Length: 213
Figure 1: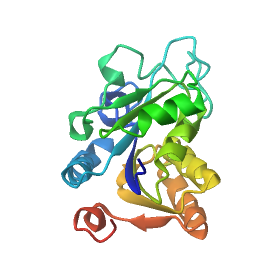
Figure 2: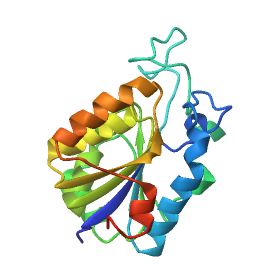
Figure 3: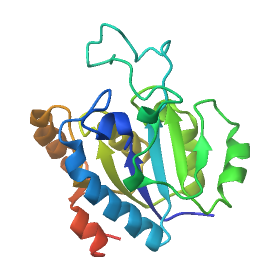
Figure 4: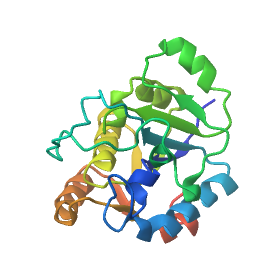
């Protein structure tokens, strides 16, 4: 079963979203209400949400006691901890969980096509496409429009957008006021580059007032 429109929730987990989280994104708490509005809109209108989430062990390459905050980071979203859990504002409905271990393409497509709930993609790297099943999900559901939001704009959101551009999603909406970056100065050049690639910049109000999907 195809899903022409999906919402894409990037890493809205306690360790990123809470001020006391292990790797708190600056001012991320300010967008929790917007994230809740987007989640409610999707569920009310029968639009599936695909959510990515970091799922770490100490031995993962991204985790370091001497992080460079570019390729490596201090421990965060450690498996089995509250920090790895999604915040209540973005709770999923009946999520189909995609672990990073690759599932045979046809097997996964067969399992995904009848699923009517949301999807949770677990990942060991900040790039959601490091989970090989992400591409299979997009092939199975074949969305023509993706509404994307979450954290952090300059890391995991960036990798999600660039991956979707590479696989050829026809229309990507970035809900910019429902994202927060780690480095504020990085946002403007990223947004300019995405606009040149036809990523559409919208607001939460645009979405929940029905002006987008």
